[in-house]
Image 1: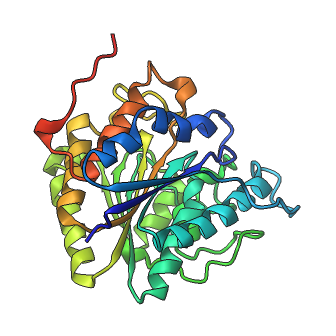
Image 2: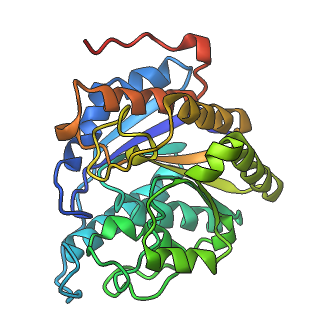
Length: 308
């Protein structure tokens, strides 16, 4: 069962990519009413404020890697916060770019291992984020969390992943932009993937239901990572990695409603919100609404939104 205690953790990490602005994401989600939306559904909410990175230690990364030492420092800080927050309830990590998940994934997985539970991951994203520092051409570390958390090598300078997440316990939904190096790795791995063509053909409920059934049978912990670019940029413009042809508002709510009905979600990331690119706060508000659906807001309870 999902905890009735929700823990908000701001992680204004902006070192995972070159386009700046995600450091404003946590406070934008707060301004859009995240705490109010969740408390209105009967949960107790504790906001721990915004984290700071651990002390930065100089470590030589490959020349093309962007802000590697800063990202390592953030990973340490978020990892520790995730372990602590899991003892208090259901943590909601407010990003911040997707490098946030280098710490949140490894932290919640460490907690699950201590509880003798399998850790599962639902990755809602246009990208697979399965690069390593060696395979990424861009050098942007927000494209590496799933590889790191599942035990891939090549993350020199990063903390050792002592409890890697089994790749067969990872499900990525919404794919529509995957680099060749990632594609080759994914095709040879047991990771479950659903791209937009499969969703066009069969809908989004079928692959999600199948995955949730596996989580339930295993009695697993489920971490959900929701990237703004999971959504079509026409409805969620506040992201620096827009890819056309994404998930509709209704499909996204269906995913979050199914997660609530399953009562399996034990932690949540809300990432890649760049308020600098938003239109009158519409993306921040949509992310809040989706989070509310994940915690039980029903279709006919949704407020009307006006952006004109």
